[in-house]
Each structure stands twice: as structure tokens, then as C-alpha cells.
Image (tube, rainbow, N blue to C red):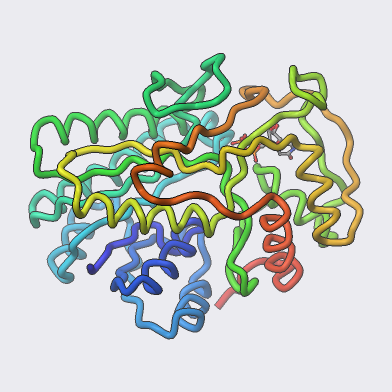
Length: 339
Ligand code: UDP
């Protein structure tokens, strides 16, 4: 298939591009490079030894989006493009709602006009909100605690309504848990702009000497060691989940499916620090700080639906995730170069 990957220059998008190419698909990337460096494309071409067609495009622009579909024979879309920083979404709600929802609209509208019906959506475990049941299953109700999360809840609802209205759609909603790790080459990985919001890139930057110490946000949660517990999933396992979902929606008769992509394993902040110290051979200095507003104590995936229906499972351990993150971070201490 010829697959349009929106946000294909981003962290999860770039790893998925490589796996799509390895599986024999053609890839068209559409990205505005607002949160990705152009130098990633050369690395993807080198790693895959394949051609990648790239459009530098703001997908909130309907005319520009339509142009991509008019220029390329697209069979399916994997939609990663979107703003993703929770704290920034609280400060700039209009920008988040506008960008994330308009991007989805332009892409879905252009797909509709061109008869493209296969759509894989990057959703998030954040749509489970504050459910007291820590092991998340796909049938739980959805809600959110910040504008970023609401954009995911809202786009999921738009997709359900679309699938209800026209049964020819084949939509996969993929709810990611905590993606970490990097390609085994160390040539691509997560390259956050500014101070990292997420745990793993922050830990990696402490290990490489870019930051003095980590703040552990709370050690008095109701968890085994008091620190927050999450389901970390290697980005390569996550990327494989997209390829499996794309295969699956090509044969299913269901207009819409929802799958958790998680490892099903639960690790605390202190366990992640210890794993990273083992992987890097460096000390990770940290200090306990107050809880971060909006954080939940603990949640993880029940990935059994994806395991069963996609024939997919996460195979990499927290140690693999740290080893691969460290290879990427130590080979690229400042992230991707400017072109
Ligand atoms: N965390 C932390 N220090 C940091 C960043 C995160 O202690 O600098 C904790 C956070 O409180 C949560 C876990 O690490 O328990 C994962 O946070 P992250 O932001 O990576 O992902 P989230 O699960 O919040 O989306």
C-alpha cells in the first residue's frame, strides 16, 4: 500500500515509517516540521535504503492537504500529526483544539473526497481519565483532564460518528501508553524541543550531562515505592502495532476498532531510574519534588485485545528500552542536527 504518514518526522511517526518500509509499503510523509528537524528524513532514507516522498505542509490548511491527496495515490493514512505537550495545552487551549481537531478534519475530508477509507489514529491512554481501575481496558468510559487529552477524546468521538454514518470506513484507534526507547541503530529517537516534559528523555539528558538532576514528582502515591507507575512501551513495539493494525483493518468487516498498545507491565519512576543507571553505567542524580498537577498515581494497559486481534505483542523489556534510549542519546547528545 501507499501509506500517508502525517507527522511522519516525529518520534513515533519516524519509527513507524521505517517499519512500514520494511514491510514493503510505500510511504508519503506529511509534516510541518514545527516539532521535528528536517535532518531526520536523511536518516530514514539511509536506514531504509528506500525512497520517501515528503510534503512540508500544515495540515490544518484544507487546500494544502487536498493537494497532497490530489498528487499521490494514497491507500491508507496513519495520522500522528498533532500537538502533544500536556502542560502547553493547558496554557494554550485554543491553539491545541484548533491544531489537533482541524488537522484531523482536513485529512478526513480529503480522504472522503478521494475515496480513501483506511485510517489509523494516534490516540492515547490519557482518554481513560481518572478511572479507579488501574488496568485499562478498551471498553472503559473516556474523559480527559487537560485540553490535549480532550482533543484525543473528541477526535475519537468524531471517528465513531463517521464509522456509524458510513460503514465503508476502516478506522483503527490506537491508545498508546508511555512510548520510550529508540531505533536499535541509535540514529533516530526522541528529540524533544526545550526542557523535556516526559520522564525518559529527561533521565537520558541527565545521564548525558545536559541536565543536573531529575525531579521525581511525588513519592507518596499509593504505589509499592510511592512513585508514579506507568506502562512503558518500546517505540519499536509501538511502531509494529501500527503495521499490524493497518494489516488488520484491510481485512476486517468492522468500520471501527479500538486497541490498547501497551506492554501490560507496570514500572515506577524509581524502577525506570534504576534501569537507566544499569543501561548507561551512569548515576542519575534525583530529588523528590511535589506531585505534578494532573498526574495519576498508577495505570497500565490490558493489551490482550490487541494481542488477540492483531497477533501483536510488546516484546521488549524496560532494560531494552533504556539501553536503546541510551544508545540514541549518547550518540546524539544534542538530538538531530540542524541542516
Ligand atoms: N515524572 C517525574 N519526573 C519528570 C517527568 C515525569 O517524576 O521529570 C513522572 C511522572 O510524575 C509520572 C511518570 O514519571 O509518574 C511518567 O511521566 P511522563 O510525563 O513521562 O508521562 P505521563 O504518564 O505523565 O504521560
